[in-house]
Length: 89
Image (cartoon, rainbow, N blue to C red):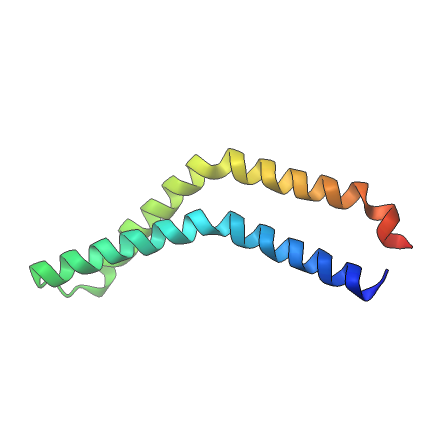
């Protein structure tokens, strides 16, 4: 296996990970921003108030995106296994 192949595999793996994590991270970011703005407007300075809405939002988005996430992971893994003989050279 050439160093270029290893770099390409690592790059495709990291790209796939970032694409799969993006909806969950974006949901946490948006909910955290909204809760932060509401805390500022209402002058409620409770630090634990941000955790529960973020967790609920991330879980909901995960459940909604689960078929897409699993499909993408299966496609990536199957492409990796199909090309395994080429990588062994």
